[in-house]
Figure 1: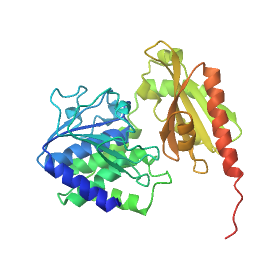
Figure 2 (figure 1 turned 60 degrees about the vertical axis):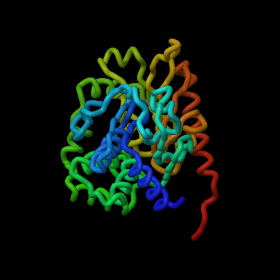
Figure 3 (figure 1 turned 180 degrees about the horizontal axis):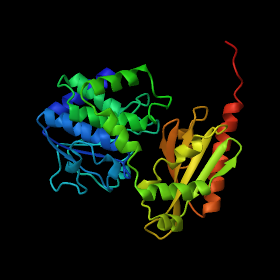
Figure 4 (figure 1 turned 90 degrees about the vertical axis):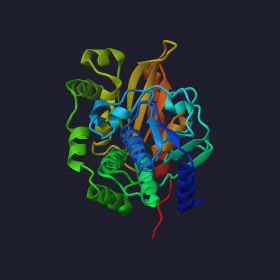
Length: 331
């Protein structure tokens, strides 16, 4: 189906049903949270019964979002008419083993997206899932409220790397302009997302950057559980550290690894990957069992740390070499 056909079919499903559950992936980021709460506001305006559920806690920097307090962390006892999963490649990606619903709806913009639901709309060209929710809102004819606009602006701002990734187009800026004109509080969003970090985040950033290593055009770093404890940090404090690594001159790809303990007591490493554009790190992530976008992806690697580091650095170098091996074309 074309994008217009997908949106039309999705709107028909939304109009036909009365109760909805909205969720997204575990360890939610700005796009997951902003798009979920933004979609909640749209369904509210359509007169629907809506519940937003996340398996993991919501980072404090998103506490300003209108409607954020309606998010719960346990699934409803009664199955809704439809469960809407945002930027997930499976139900398991939500952090819930099972979600009971009469219909599952999958809305995703990752290249690694999969058709696992009853209805699937995957658009890898979209700058954010928040941009896809925006398209639904515009097509619905209901109008975009100030609360919805603030949520969707947050989703797009954060998932485009503050409008720096290759998915940022003229249409992205037009979308942002419309959201601000509709009441999105852009200054408040920026202040909360970028200038409201707890001291623990700054302490863990210092420790992580002290571990930084440079290997040609690859930069990588890590943080151990012992260092996390020393900083008094929580996992969400590690969000964005990889952007400092990719921000250096001469670096084309970067990786940041956070140590954690699995339920089986084994050490593994949540790995964030970034690229300036020449290398598609989503392909690297997929080969390592993860996924994501061309410029921003992630995966989880088993320990020990030295082996995990070697594996991810080798994969990034291999991806960079394959790009440089492609002969240039004269236009």
